Length: 535
Image 1 (tube, rainbow, N blue to C red):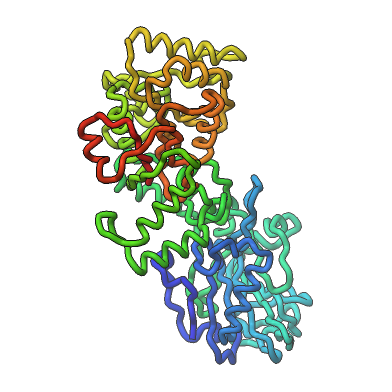
Image 2 (image 1 turned 45 degrees about the horizontal axis):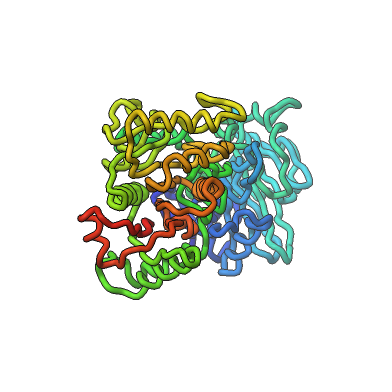
């Protein structure tokens, strides 16, 4: 019996194997033969298990403990178990041979799955010349055959020694010009222990997929070899996605795994995630995954129904807010765009004004209101030309690459903002700050926030909109330092439920309306009490 662990998914399309699996290679296997998935999407490698040094050995041991007679690590399946993190160099993750592990026990005979002539014999295996320019290699078993012997399918090739531990043996089909000669390509591949498959790095897979062939068909196994399909996935996406739904990179990698601060593409290459804006707790957090799984099995509905978890969640959020802040109300939304839209409405209702000053090259969302204050030419090349008349744009205070540079840049940027205020006779409903626009690592121009604070506060509301937890923390630190104690309304909408809840809170001294009066206050436009907009 052949078991394909996780390979039953639509991601794989294994070809049917003729006859009993491994019957022409390892006769006498009576138990289950398990084909493992050590790949990027393997459900057996969650919660960071793929980072363990013994990850492969643990997968193999688990299969044997479940009664397997043999375990297969297939040719050409990228192994996330070999992924290296925190390095610029990709690890060797693509095996150029099929690796078969046999359960502990007595000695076993290894048969030839091919016909040909023995051209090399070593203490750990042999090499068979097939018709044409292809060679079959056996590694991990000793043979008594000698160079020049002819073999046919079913000939006894070697013996797998008796052992109290599981024993690996590998089989490879390789072109002659990749193996023969002192300067052949095989010498550029890191040697492997006896019986183990050699692996190559993702960028070398196109070459080695031509130098080698999947031996699955001659072993009676399904063919599962993978290749980098990012280009095809990109084409698929472009056919069905709106062009406004942008992506990163001209030649994007296909990311299918996240763990903590790392992303892993389908070739097993890892990246430090310094871009993603929805994972303040890191990727794949087991506690979050377990909580979501537990709750969704019980109930998943909207907030118009009465149920305990909604109130408990909200109370726990409020308990994390600053003591004596007067913040006692939450208004739950389902996206960052909606949170920004709501914050805009709240600021305008609280101040009785409509005008907004937004920093240049800022992105705030898809809704009509959040798009109106979005100034990023990257997201919209006509962003500055099609702003409504109630939105005014100020430069981002970048002292290294901005309009003004150097130690006195902050005062110059603040003066420009003051000029906008005087020329437009602004009664500002909201000063929109995203700390450092799109660059959360940009150094803070400290005198700038204090200058504009003294200029515009407490006559306007400040909205700190941030696409990342780091930016929002930085923004709050900036405004704390600028103002000392915040006496004007500050709204911090967030676009992810996974972030630390405190970043969603208004840090204002103003009081908040009770829940039932919120809608009335918004409609009348007269309330100065601002609820917290969170998702």
